[in-house]
Length: 281
Ligand SMILES: Cc1cc2nc3c(=O)[nH]c(=O)nc-3n(C[C@H](O)[C@H](O)[C@H](O)COP(=O)(O)O)c2cc1C
Ligand code: SF4
Ligand code: SF4
Image (cartoon, rainbow, N blue to C red; front, top):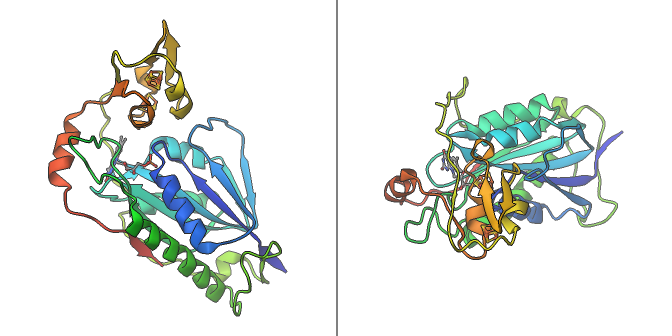
């Protein structure tokens, strides 16, 4: 007999929208044994073993693909008897090939794909004077994510030919079955191209530090790549390590950092129409 008896909520999420969505999906599943796997600032290199788990894996879209550092970190996962729910979160422009790319990466790491979804998060480049998907995920997105979690669990139960799920919040919750997961589960079709799009190399750029910075060091803890250091009471950035994620810009308590790019105005103009979550289930 094999079993799935816990929930793993995995994410890479510099500005925390992918994390918020992953948590809302997890809430909809309401499984007692649950652990977070936050890969955002985890730059370790050793394998991360995951076993007998239902895994929600949520990452942001950068340039129509998954954020490169997210891909790099997810390659540490080694799954044994796990289903995965790949989720990509994007800033209301488009997700292009990101979800198929994430699905394929998770298959390579040993997961069986249960279903997938795309959600909208406030764009990393959004500013109060030029908002892009500001405040998302909002209440509507969170409700959709919770419902998706519930539906995903029902789909899993159906695919494993298990009758009514008893109390998922019971600490002894387990879905039991007798064959390998990939012989029981049929993955739904997911939108995106293979081969994936190719990215043009982007010009290195990093946020600028202004006179508001008083060297508190908070942005150092948010930076996923360790690109920030403190010198003479001010934060400075190693441009070659910067991923342009804008976590330091969003989380500096005094507006000490700005990331100025022409994309902000362009996306603010062109991506006004609200996009909605897409569920592949
Ligand atoms: C370098 C970079 C590239 C991005 N590319 C896209 C994109 O192609 N499409 C899109 O809609 N949003 C794009 N975004 C916005 C993010 O996908 C969006 O803000 C997401 O919610 C960030 O996730 P996080 O909060 O988990 O960091 C990009 C953001 C950055 C920093
Ligand atoms: S930029 Fe902001 S968060 Fe970073 S050290 Fe300066 S004041 Fe602190
Ligand atoms: S320095 Fe660059 S990589 Fe680090 S948090 Fe700021 S934008 Fe992100």
